[in-house]
Image 1 (cartoon, rainbow over the protein chains, first blue to last red):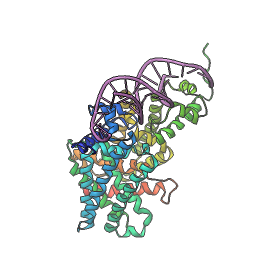
Image 2: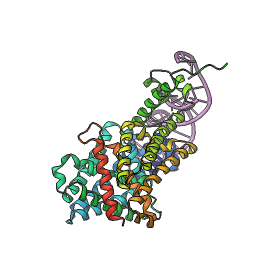
Image 3: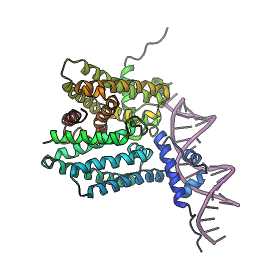
Image 4: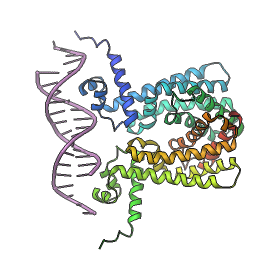
Length: 199
Length: 199
DNA sequence: CCTACCGATCGGTAGG
DNA sequence: CCTACCGATCGGTAGG
């Protein structure tokens, strides 16, 4: 009879993931070894390999868990029956909460995509594309004129992502200006901007 | 008597720098070895070490040459006797030209700062701070109200940098929408946005 | 006889 | 400017 999985399997796995995200965010994926990760988790390398088949699979899981959370949040907001501008505000707040709550995973997602094997990278990129599509659709709802200028849809969405994704390099969650305020400012700047300038 | 430097010393050094920028942009600093760099330059590892004392010094030079070019361009635009909004437009165009013309160096500057030793990192960060200051001053010229809301000055400047720095992840210089047009769109969105929303 | 985990060490390759 | 190497450390796996 097969023995049961350890009762805390999921918790242990998640603890490894969280330590890995921190190490990879700080030193880069290649700059942090499995030995470093094992030390941070206060176990052995073998224990890490019991939970993950390879170092790259850990990186994939760090990115995948985060990008899935972003997509879930975005789909939830997109489905709300609200005016489109209010949706973009809500989406920006939701993104900012996830960025702050999972800052290490976010940084890894943005910096280490190139370290993934093509197949795994494609899984992440596909989810990211769905995120971009959701934002594009919101922008068209806000400025229907954008639908006629199809070439500008993607650039507009990417400029929006630039504003909020870049915050991970400078925003201090315990700084003078709270993340909620920054999210509000970013959404306001973007909404006024495209309202005036893409018509 | 000391032998003269090779007449093409500077050109060779610059060729190394350019190949290094490309390799580090594609594989990451830690993912590209000195042997890879030597192969790309069609020489030996020893030749590389003739021009640079260490791998890290190559990384520093890649970043330093680029951030200096950005600062020079920004200071030139800031000194022009023009209306502040026109200056921000000109600055955005100047940044975009440098990002496109030195895409690999730009990517390395944004992704590999953590791989530098603290002393060298500080040199780069100081120049980056001067860049941010120049943008902040322009924003205050555009919206004098920002001076009274000091806490928002830096966030506003960083949201601007987010928009344009992030372009390196998605902007194709040979795509349907030219970089000049993206720069114009970004500056317009930002100018209308802060005009309306930070008063 | 399984899963969970350890200390020790593998073959290869890094920067120098 | 090259080949021949070094001390160290890498990701991954062995036996028990």
